[in-house]
Length: 446
Image (cartoon, rainbow, N blue to C red; front, top):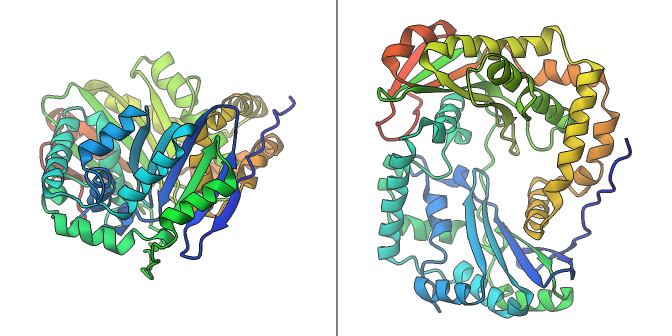
């Protein structure tokens, strides 16, 4: 099958004297302008017991600045139909901004105001903290919303990769406005930012306008943290989160996976897809289609500069949890003992080939990916060669990757549901620890 021609756009890359990285791509097909702005400081920069600080700081940027109140910022944005959002992540933070291209000057003025002159009003800080704590309490009403938070905290116990990007009830309650201001002063500097701009604009004009608004912003010498690689679990362990009124049991199992720049990343995508990345995956077929134990099962990895978590996740009724876990473990053993045959490999390649172009359709997708490629040092060749590398994969290579990165023993297990019904069923998988869902926070390493 002939691959579609996919080539990542040729962004113009320029670094201002103060270290601000610009990535610019003109696309005049629509009168739209998209900014994807990456801050190279995420949750791993939060001080211990202050998780959520980076997220709160990012969220408050538009809630008051030197030239606009929060209301004035919102009114200016709404008047021109603009879109603004933030996404606090583990290793970085993202700010997304979209407007009609005719409003380019306003867009840059708003960005300069919120990025360079935020005032972090006390009232807005208090409101954000109250909302964030209430959101976590509400989220815990459905364990499916938070099971991955517990899993990461359990798997990466004591490591910064185990943190929740949005903090937790206890850490958020311990934050102060002064600490938000301190985080901003420490990390918000031009040399810590990547600005990706895509859409209907003139590159020389855009560079000049960014230089005008951000060129006198002083760089800082703050060294960004570089965590050491995490150790996976050396023997199977179990965490049970008690929610007595819950009818379903939500569960995750897994171990350490791969990093963004792993040379086998395409083959890892193939194994994850056939295992739990499509409706006809091994896990979904066995758990849902054949046995009717769940509405769905997934397998995926969280990839960072260093290896993140590989996770299998699903849910079922309490009486079926052992059967569901047996099926999950059988599918992992199947990878190791039977392996992947040529027909399965080709089917998975076809699925990925069909889905891949949809990840590069919109301006925000493309600009966001440009930020990621720059941040992780991957380069556009990761995109340009993806489908060719996919086609070139052999049965032997994919089975080697399955053996290397997808353990079938020495796993971390996390269950959320009624402990009274589950305790005897799940303690067979390893030493058991218990928490209560209504307790603040997630898992804390002793």
